[in-house]
Length: 158
Image (cartoon, rainbow, N blue to C red; front, top):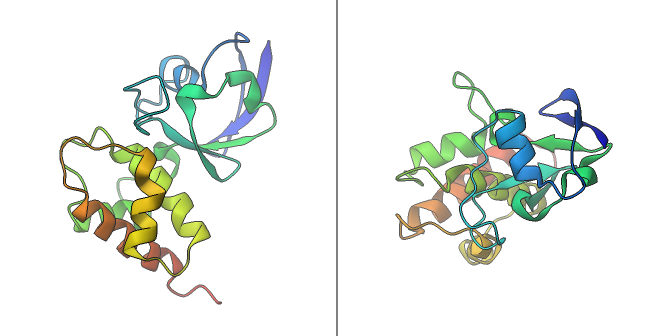
């Protein structure tokens, strides 16, 4: 079946199977490998993307559901020369080590920041419960999300 949606601001029309996962379409068919797949069971959060501005685990969403939506992957947030504020915060706060979970963490963190203009460490920890990292102790990830959230809201009228 033909599915049409916007991916990182660009119109995409692609034939997908009714049982094909969004993560597979994004990575294997469209070549955006920043969306990582680790568990295939919605446990780790490495595959988080935004669908219509909301963070979702793409390994459990069927590709036909993308019809008419706007999808943003980590590749659509910023660029190497102009990082998104959350990407910059993860870099500056050392919120990553091996980097495997980082795209999903950042995508979840951006959704968090959009919904929580006044972040707290406890609410960040609760929000990120569905994102697993095997390398860090989460302390720097939480600091990065707090800093990134503040940066995203700087200069935004209340």
